Amino acid sequence: MLGPLEIVVDGRPVEFPSAKARLLLAALVVRANEVVSADRLFEVLWGAQPPESAANTLQTYVAHLRTGLEPDRARRKAGQVLVTRQPGYMLVIEPGAIDAVRFERLAEQGRRELATAPADAARTLRAALALWRGEALSDFTYEPFTQADISRLTELRFAALEDRIGADLSLGEHHAVVGELAQLVSEHPFRERLAGQFMVALYRDGRQADALRAYRRLRDTLVEQLGIEPNPTVARLEQAILEQRPDLDWSPLEAARIPAAVPARPAPGVSGEQAAARGRAAAAERRWQDALECLSAADRDGALCGDDLDALADALLWTGIALGGDDLATARSAVSELAGLADVFASPAIRAAADTAQGAVLLADGDAAGAVECLSRSADLWRDANAPYERARARMLLARALHARGERSRAQGGLQAARSAFESLGAGLDLGRLAAFDTAVADRG
Image (cartoon, rainbow, N blue to C red; front, side, top):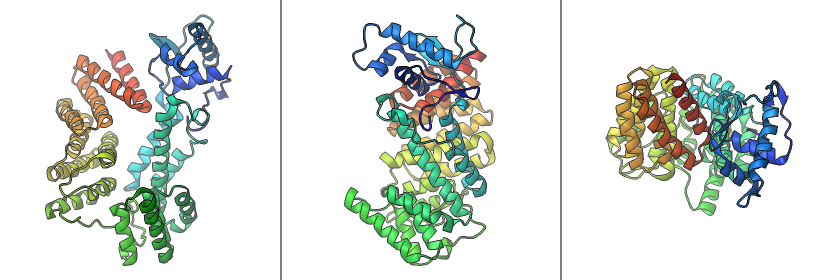
């Protein structure tokens, strides 16, 4: 999916018999391990007015694809990859066989490593980015059914690129990335994190005046074209450069992402207790830097909404959940910091993030009952925070906890609710993960 659509079987690319067959396969790939109805496939192939022969023609395309996908399949034997499932068809494939899924896993791993092992993060993120062969699904750029996946994967690619540059800066490679950042900032003038990284690279390369000019260009662009000021983190970075603060200089001990080294300053009207909570979160191995940027932009009461809510959920919730799989000690520490923030800032989003991360850690610890309690509460809080995507992911985790506790019927109901939400949101990769878990539940009875 990370380039023109390509299917490889036993090292050989699959030949597509026609453009329509290729379009059909694309529609099945983006919903891998999920049943796609025949009516939906008619719409993909022919739009609102399919021909009278649509059903027979679809079956012909399916037969041709099966031949390419399973060249050694005996005649008249049921397919194991492209299978018939009422009311349509499903492409059954291991998630790791899809380059987009491998990329997402590596990108998440790299982001985790960035906090404490930037050299490992740089290698992991380079491996993730090397999977790309062009723009996502570049031969289906204008097809309506690919838009959600293309947008999601493109944003993840940018985030991984910014993380990789952050790792390079942490390793003292500021001179090496200056040219790359100059081009990226020129091509993407609204990406403030890139602009901040460019400012740091220039400053560390002995170009303080150029770093300040980079900030002014960013500010002029945002004010003139969008009517907004740069985010507080980048604004603080400009002040730090003006003051030539020593903590901007690179040292071999640096392990935090840039501009994480810029100390946060309490916003006007924020209490000392709130500022202390932010400071404690920053000390938790810098894992919550993105969350602090959101909190800095929040209003006097610490309420969050809109883009702030989405970024907070991504930075706190899913970093914590990923940690729950392989570093429980750090995950518990992170959850503790998140719970402290939830106690200070009266926001359903922060409380929901704290409860979901806590539920994930409890589930990894084998405490299914405690996980069910936390995740049930967090699903309700995500609803109150008007965050349907985060609520769906919490309900998927809740289904895992219910199944671990032996409540299989409730687990299946939770999976169905999560599936419906992901379908309405166009979250294809999450649907693939959910389908894999759903199959595992069914296999285990």
